[in-house]
Amino acid sequence: MALERTFAMIKPDAVARGISGQILQLIEENGFRIVAMKKHPISTKEADGFYGVHRERPFFASLVKFMTEGPSILLVLEKESAISAWRELMGATNPANAAEGTIRKRFAESIERNCSHGSDAPETAAVECGYYFSASELL
Image (cartoon, rainbow, N blue to C red; front, side):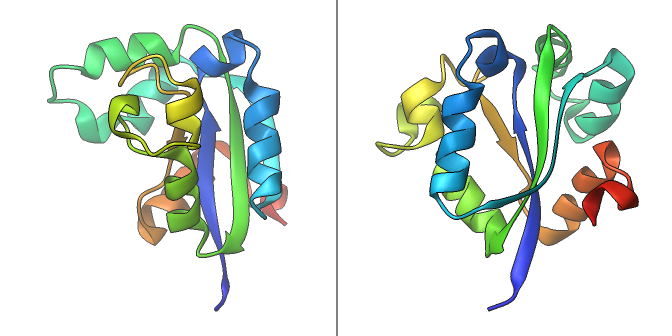
């Protein structure tokens, strides 16, 4: 199986609560290689573009507000089947439905304040990795 890359984000709620180190440790313990990483305060314009697919949904304004309340940790992860492996490690979007031991089950406060984000498909991963990282940062 070939190596795959995915975009991952430790959201502002986890950074503010000081649990990003624990999440990074889980990432490495689960065999991911961190290709790129930066702590970044997401602007309203960036959040609006990044989450634009949800623009017509009732939670969009709240999501943008949440994502801009403090810095996030942005990552590009690499591993065999990285997209599905990262989504499995994160757990279900709603922490009440997440499996035991997953990031969201362990650390999330709610369906919105759920600590992490991950790409859902190779095409999405390519777009999301390029949204916050330049080609030279991904070597």
